[in-house]
Length: 85
Image (cartoon, rainbow, N blue to C red; front, side, top):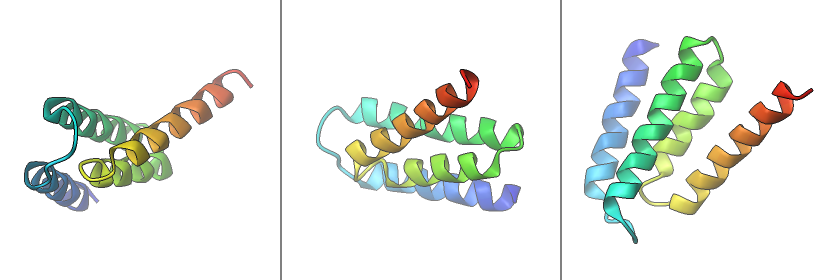
């Protein structure tokens, strides 16, 4: 599983360097790094579904910035819903 995670991170970094997104490039890189960190934290805490969703969002983030923000927002709202339940 760790090998797969590292492979996806490598692919995400390659996508990040090859894609030329509209807008601030450093902000887009920060978004991808943030998504990867959140995915790693979710896997560490034993939440593989959440980690996979965040990893997928990190993969599409360089080309589809708004969609990755939407996915990240939905995950955050779900976490808040569970916390205040």
